[in-house]
Image 1: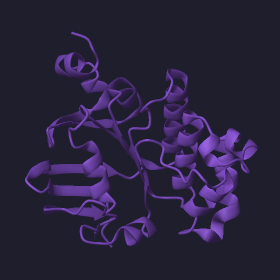
Image 2: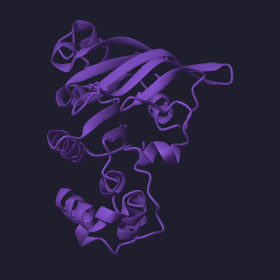
Image 3: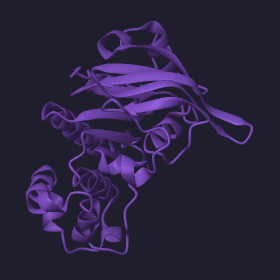
Length: 239
């Protein structure tokens, strides 16, 4: 059997909202165990692209392959059960439920390993263990983001999609979140991160795609792009 190097491959993908072309013929790939960043200004199409991978946004044309299987037209629940998970923008949680109930909802695709996965989440985020019975809506913004991440990880996905995790958070919390993403990647999780904080994204990732008005404007190794004058001028505030 032929070995599949790519965990995710996107081919000529286009997404439209009526007359608005949000994503235009994008090509992108992620290898097993790779941490890939997707940077660009607000409105560049990053979130639209991530949602299309999970089947939330339907492709106008093009294809999405996950583990060698075409998932372009599959329903979201089938895509999630195949090993994909999204940590959405804005630390989306079920605010009227407890922390533990939020994590239980995240495990519905993988109930067999619930206790083992819950222990791992509490190891990553000790504050969630301390507040497991607390109503999620009363957590701080940073704690809610940790809960959103923990809930996504409860299904033990093969690929984690992360949408703007630093949004609205204090710098120290942002650093903590990125440290956790780095540790997850070291453990073998493949990660696709969409992020406006280009410096953090480039420092943490192996490779990076730069989106501009729905298109891939540039791509390469993150260590190269962080020193590229165009990237520094546009996204890092330097010359």
